[in-house]
Amino acid sequence: MDQPTIHQLVDHLFRHESGKLVAVLTRIFGVDNIDLAEDVVQDSLAEALGQWQYRGIPANPSGWLFRVARNKALNILQRQKYQRKYVSGARHDLSSDSSSESLLESFFSEQEILDDQLRMIFTCCHPALSKDSQVALALKTLCGFSVPEIARSFLTTEENIKKRLTRAKQHIREACIAFDVPAGLELDRRTGTVLETIYLLFNEGYSASEGDDIIRCDLCVEAIRLAGMMEQHPAIRDKSDVCALLALMYCNASRFKARQDAEGRLLTMAEQNRSLWDNSFIAKGIEYLHRSTRDGHLSVYQLLAAISAQHNVAPDYASTDWKSILMLYDNLITIEHSPVVLLNRAIALSKVDGPEMALQALEPLKEDPTLSSYHLFYSTRADLYMQLNRFSAAADCLEKAISFSTLEKETDLLRRKLLSCTEKIS
Amino acid sequence: MEKEFMLLIHNQMDSKSQLSAEESQRFLKDCMVYINDLMKQGKLKGAQPLVREGKIISGSKGSWKDGPFNETKEVIVGYYHIVAKDLDEAIAIAKGNPEFVYTSTARIEVRPIKMVEQETGFVYPKEG
Image: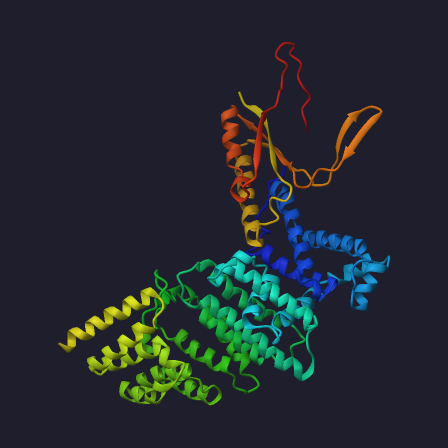
């Protein structure tokens, strides 16, 4: 008996093959039948498993899976040709023509698979769907995540995710959302929506949590993979935003292992162990950053990526180039004048012009509805007051921060800071 | 002396259809490790899956009946043909099968293969 091999089994092969297959089968069965496509894929994976568990993985696992899925699709089309109403002409041909087998074959070519995945990206990220639904649907169909895995990544129940997915698919049917890549001006607009969803997916994985870190890392990797597909596809001609988002995600993801402590508390740049940063990710981030700047237009992703990269290239916290970072924030507020950006700019400002100036810049934001209930707004100001030895003002801010903090470990840390402040007052 | 055993794997026909893509991949890796370990120790003579499609024949000459399996019923999904020094070792090997880790409905039948008829000395023909 031959030694079975596992070397063909690259990371997440099953997830990614299932993402490809669901896309291709959705094109064949129609976008109304994503469920059917998913069932056929699930069935094909189970069949592969039943064989490979004894014999080892075949030389071309992906080809094996595609053959099985194609045969299953053919059976369904032939069995149901009179029962199911196929909308498009292509599908009609498939179910009636005796040459359907060779026609079906063409759906499984390398280029068609790429095209179908891009169609799936635009369908999942259709602006008519809620952002939550977009992310869940993309994870399920494109990334091959199971319902329990999605539930674990969002720290919610499986029931919730199931509802979200059912609603999304229903919405796709009712709104007659096409399984297609938009063209012309529509393409630019819709690309923006897709990138937003991908960034949301990324941040879902990157944000601190006490949940499962492996699955959160998978979310970041998947977000990068989806953006990579956009970047590779010739249909997307203007790649600057895609490259900028890739740059941002690579630069941030390079700090994934260093970003939080064992308790799930987010660490600041000053606290992170820089030897845990991933240099290959940093290099990719910077490469994409260069590619995004070619046509000279500025985007939010690009400026955020440039700020992130500034941190990445500083050998230690003390040598951070705060002047450049402040300049990037100044540019950023001209295109995105959001309270959170202003808060982060204030930190850079404090490094360049001192804590007093930063506090002054934050003063008008006290009434802002977003920031007035955001614990970081108060803890940032507390830090600035402490630098100025104004401990009772700092204590006031810390009390507010504690009242708005949701993570237990974060609250603990704020309490310890508060204690040290009150000791200095008395 | 080493004896030969058949490990007949019983499970629900669809026992693995609920595994996620990632679990399927982990299961597969575990199976490869399991098989490789047995082979390195020279304890594995063969392992094969049995495909889902098949018939059950019953009756006798003149009145044959053949029917498909009932899909919800447990079936033999595959077998391992192993070498072990006694039944206890064969059982221990069976217990290490990843099938038990990833599904809750697996049952493994451990059966010694009769090699020599004690009374007559008749040696049964071997595979391969």
